[in-house]
Image 1 (tube, rainbow, N blue to C red):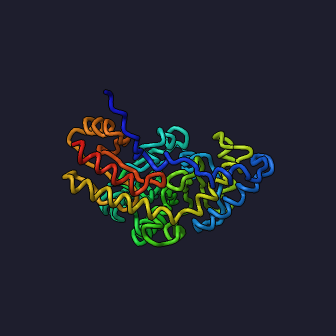
Image 2: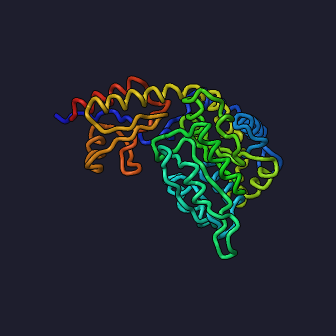
Image 3: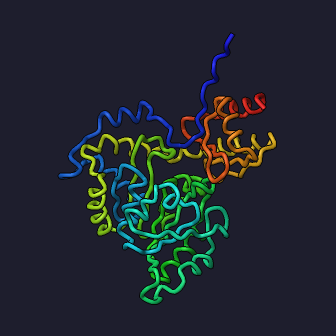
Length: 342
């Protein structure tokens, strides 16, 4: 007799969530217009609300976080410029080289010598060097920060360290872009409003589909002048979605649920504790990402898949991401399968 396969428990990302009935109803009832010609009212409402949350004068909806970051880099860089970002940043490792290919920038990674995902001000200052060097030297006009830092295990940059890095960058005349795809997670974990984590940044991106349950959508925010230019760049990159209010409605519902992220953080903490009890080498999660070190990475991934546990490799470790579609019971079931299966 063949045993039935175990139900899948999906830890691959917090982007695997599906819109619930409330979100789907909001999408179905959304007021819409042509967002390329004369604007979509629901898009406008989402952009205004997101800008306020992020502490920025204006915001622009984009279909994806990659496009949001790319728009910022295209407007902040000239071809042949160097930009700085913590090692493993999404703009360096996960956006198919678009920062170099389309924005024309050469990335220089900064080591995490202040903690996971975070360079020290001294490391940043040394990387900037002399901003007024000889004409043949690379210009370094941009610092990209990431909060939370994905590949560092959802690590948070606290406000004081963010402020120190921004101060060094500004002193040298650099623009600062913050990739805040999971900024909401940092906000909830620290008990601070999102705007408290963007202080000093010239532009910031944030995502509605990472943890908040929306099927699609991000924003890139900054000054009114920046957003005016960004709208043109979005069109150039193919982001001129017409009746996008159907998608923006999901984003508005998502923003109502920022506080729910605390449950995902609690589940990540419980999951990590269970792994440690099982003898696995695991990080202490600051948000909703748990990373496990395994001597046989591929073998461990295949073993987990055989238990119906879906994960992905990240930075040489196994990444488990908790999210709103996983309950506390799912966490306990995962730990039970690992205990009984191994």
